[in-house]
Each structure stands twice: as C-alpha cells, then as structure tokens.
Amino acid sequence: MNNVRDNLKAYLDGELSPMQMREVESAVERDGELRREFEEMKQISSTLRTASVAPTVVGLDKTLAALKKPVRPPLLRFAPAAALVGTCALALIAVGHFMRPQPAFNDEIPLAMEKNPALVHRSRASTDSNRQAAIAGVMAGGEHDDTVPVQISPKAEVNSRSLDVAAERKGQPVDALNPVRQIVKTGELTVLVPRANQALDSVNAIAKKLGGLVESSNLSGDEMDGRSASVSLRVPVAKFDEAMQDLRKLGKVSGESTDGRDVTTEVVDSDARLKVMRAAEQSYIQILNKARKQEDVLSVHDRLDTVRQDIEGLTAQLKSLRNQAAMSTISVTITQKAAPKVAGVVKDNWIDKTWAGAWSGLGFAGRKLTEALIYLVVFSPVWIPIFIVAGMLGRKARQLA
Amino acid sequence: MQAVQEKSVPTERLDISEIARGYYDCVFRFCARRIGPDAAADAAQETFLTAQRVLRKYRGEAPLKTWLLGIAHNECRRILRKKRTEPVTLELIEDPSASPESSWVDRSALQQAMTKLSSEHREAVVLIELDGLSYEEAGHVLGVPAGTVKSRLHYAFVILRRTLFPAGVEA
Image (cartoon, rainbow over all chains, first blue to last red; front, side, top):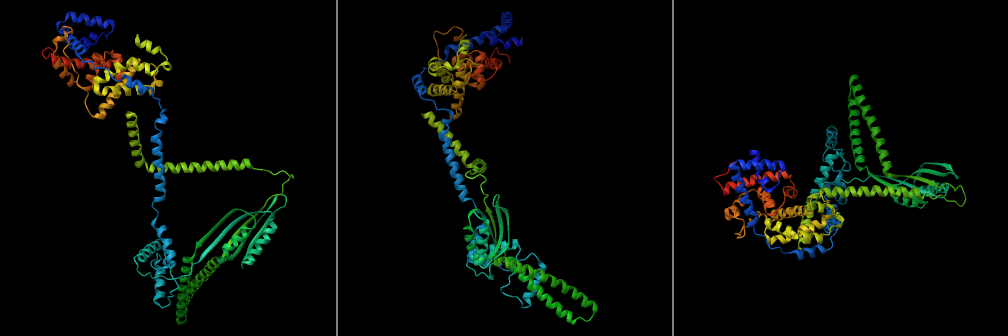
C-alpha cells in the first residue's frame, strides 16, 4: 500500500507506466483513505497551477539586441584580462629581478676592500689552535713583524670582515695590517691566424718585449691539413693586459678567458708560518747546544730536522706563490686554417652553424621560459589575486555591456 | 513530440535569435518565479547570451527548452548566490475562473507552506506544477534522474498536505 501511496502524485501527473497507473487507479477506487489523499493532492496541484501569478514578460527586444552583438571568441574574451595579468607578471618579474636581495657579504666586502684592502688580513681568529699558540708565542717573544699577518680561517675571516665593515661604518678606527696584494693572473687565448709559424715568432717577440719569456711551445700539423700551435708564456703581472692586447692582434680571436686569484692570504700565512718555524729552529739550536745527554741531543736533533724540512717546503711554496704572482701565465692556442683542397671552392658549413645556433637558441629559450615559470610560481600569491580581480572586473564589464 | 522535433534539428541551423523569440517567455517566467520579475529580464538575457556562446556544444541530448531552462536555472542560482538572498515567495491570487476543487485550498496557507519547503522540494514543485515540465524534463533541468524528481515531489506534497490538511496526513 505504501508503494501505491508513494506513486499517488506521479499517478496524478500521469508519470506512471500503464500497468502502474491501473494498479494505483484500482487502489484509489478500493481505499477511501487513498482516495481522500489523492483528492487533497489534486486540490493542491490545481490551486498551484491556477492561482499562481503569471508575470508580465518584458525585455525580449533588449535580449534580441544583445544577441546581435558579435560574440567574441573565448580566447579574445579573456584577452584583456590575460594581457593585464601578463603585464603585471612581467612587471613583477622585472621588479623581482632587480630588487632581489643580494647576500650581504658579497655586497659589502668588495666595497670595504676597495676602501681598505688591509681589512681582510687582520689577525682576529684561527681554527688552528696550535698555530695560534705558536704565533702568540712569537709575538710575545718580540719577533712579531707588523707586516706579517696570520692566516684566518674562512669562517673567521667572514666574521672578521663583517666586523671590520661594521666598525668602519661606525667610524671606529680599523687596526689593519697592510700587506702587498698578491694576485696570480692567468689568461687563455685562442686565435685563428693565416700563418702559425709567423704567429709563433710574434708571440716570442711579445714575450721578450714585455720582459717575459716563453715557457713552452709546440707546433703541429702541416700546411695542407692546417697547423696548430700552443704557447705558454710568462709576463710580468704589470704587463699582463698589454700582453693580452698584443696577442689579440695576432689574428681572429675565437676564445678568450682571464682569471685572477688572490693569493695574498696564502702568502702572508706561509710567511708567518715560516717565521714561526725559524724561531722554533733557533730555539732548538740553542737547546741542542745546551744538551748534555745523548738522548736529549738525539731527540732535539729529530725535531730540528722536522722543522727544517717544513721550512724548506714552506720556502719553496712561498717562492712558487710569489713567482706566480710576479709573472702571469698566458696560454695561447694558435690555429691555422687548412688550405682549401679544391681551388675556388670554399666549404661553407652554414647548415652546421644554423643547426648549432638553433639548438643554442632552443636551450636559451628553454632556460628563460623555466626562469619565467619559476618567477610566476614564486609570485603566484601576487598575480593570482590580480587575475581573479581582473576576471571579476571583466565579468562585470560584460554584464554592464 | 516537441522534443523529438527539436532533436532532429541540426545544431548548425539553430539561430539564437529565433530560439530567443520562441522561448523567451518561458525562460522569463521561469526566472521570474525564482528571482522575481525585476531581475528576471537580466537573468533571461544572460541565459540567452550564455546559450549563444555554448550553442555549438548543444548536441540535442535534451530538448531545447529543457536545455535553456537548465542554463536559466544555473543563472538564477548564480544571481541568488551573489545577492545572498532566498528565492522569491510564490505569489498566489484568487482566481474566479478556477476549478471548484482548487477553491477548497486556502491560498495564503499554501503560499506560506511553500516557503517552508526545502529549496530542493520547492524547486521540484515549481518545475512540475508551475513550469509544467515532465519529471524527465525537470530532471534534465536540475541535473538529477527523473526518479529523484518523483521522490522530491512526493515528499513535498506530503509536507504540503500535512500543513494544509493536518487531520488526514500519514507520515
């Protein structure tokens, strides 16, 4: 019976299958209660259908006029918002690129070093406690030389630099030593020349003119297959730039690089250690002279040997460093083009060049796209709200139109 | 029959202006019953503009009228959500030409009872009784099966009967 009751409204609306219709119909005829329910439903339904107010229809003309306006393709509809968002994103990327925070150390230290190069060589900290003790001993012994700084560990050096910069900015005097800066400069140059022999002679001449020397050179190949030579020359560090300029004139430069390594810290550190060791050597000699027992003599002698070996090694290292700093090394690779095998026919490798160029361009574009994507992701908290606002404004504008 | 005829029309030949002329009244009234006559014109216009944009996607799965009412239904819901208001109250008038059985029901009580229905039940009642849709068409508009419409309508009428004829209703 409940099933029939559930179908009563559908029966009234004629939404049942013929079989169900007959079933409900007979049930309604048999059951007075069902019939009463059916009648009540019928009354409600009839009242709803007849008594509801039919609103007056207006606005058809306006709608037809609106429909006659050309419909912009979906992509064009979002074009203003997309353009706005794109512009904002690009602006943000540009702003972000130029305003991104730089590490404080890189920013401040070169400036401070420019003002006072001695800042980086202050004796402030060392991780090597033994050496620190030794240095302290030497200094206490009155053998300390103001020109001799001690090695500073990288971490301590950073702290030292920061403190010095801070101190200098506050106007406090900086207790700086003043070592001569030792820079090991190296350069590499690849030149394409018409004649490798002549170029090799020219390199020799340049080295002599500038007070340098050719350390090594070799020449290989022949006129037909092309020749190549590599030369390593040493020139005084003051003449490095002049040498590079002269070498560039040899032919067409296809590659060039220069490098400068500041070895001041290494030099002053080695110097300080050398002085400490020499002091130790003198002490051992004095002890050795006073030693009476054979056992003591041997023991002190052993130590003296060790110290002297260290002194030798350190002296050689120091000499090498000073030599490197005094004379710059320039490696020159000279290439001579092979003679064309068929007269008048010049092989043009434009396809290879284009291919390589295209690949290079693709890589560059990919890198830039990835960079842009990273910026977009990082700046998403900024541009997503802008995008949402632009979308809302666009929707509003469309509705008003 | 109308649905069959509509389905047989190739969608490329459908002209939105013709569609608007044919179905504007129906869509307007549909909107007016949900958001009021003042906002109905805008909602109806937006319905046809939306239909114009997506007409090429219409494949005739549902009758055109049902398809349009579905868009109108979404548009009305969007407007109600935006305005944060409830659907308008159903307005019933005394009709002298009404059938005798309908005059047995107290119209103001029915109007009041309709406001107490849940939005789902009220929507089913309005679609079937006022918009004159079949269960299947109402299901298309609401995006639910016809059986769900039947069930909602049944329970809506149980509630209405309980309110209007408290003595005779069984749970």
